[in-house]
Length: 258
Image (cartoon, rainbow, N blue to C red; front, side, top):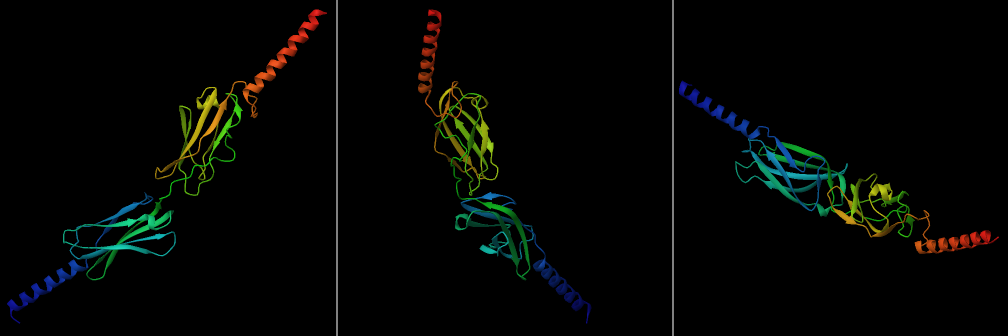
């Protein structure tokens, strides 16, 4: 074999080696969205990015699973050009139930069948607004309290998930963190910053996606002369006090008469 043929064969083998190396070279894919521990809702765009070696990538398929369940395909996006490095897929999150333990995966395939993938765990899907229901220990709305007397603002346990609650009473408000999907806190009129009188109380419940729901309103009566847990109207107490003063005056006059 002469030198020219040897040189030609060498060039062919080197070219073939480079081609095979390029086709079978490992790619790196990054699942950009959703990120780990992200909270998503509605129609969501799953996004992924490949490294610079994209000539041999044919497609990227996206998957999700709930907890330890089986993988479910969201769909496949094919490579449309040698310069394509981003692959996206739209996902309707309302098609599955709300859950806070989802894993998403992006898997890229090349011409030789080799794959590379990336995952995001702990993703929360939340398409349901929280509920805002007064708890059994909350103010009943027919009880008068002294300014220094304590009372409770409370919601019922919400299976849809509660992150925080904002309590509105009159022109004052306070935001508290939820614990165990319930909001509860003890106040006095003094600590909440409200004066004597009849006030409207509302609880606004927030979830992790900043969805919110307002409760029904209740009346909170702050009376400096309230007897505590009595629901008796203040006019009745005034009447009894007047009767008491009348008898005291009559008793005093009888004493002085003697």
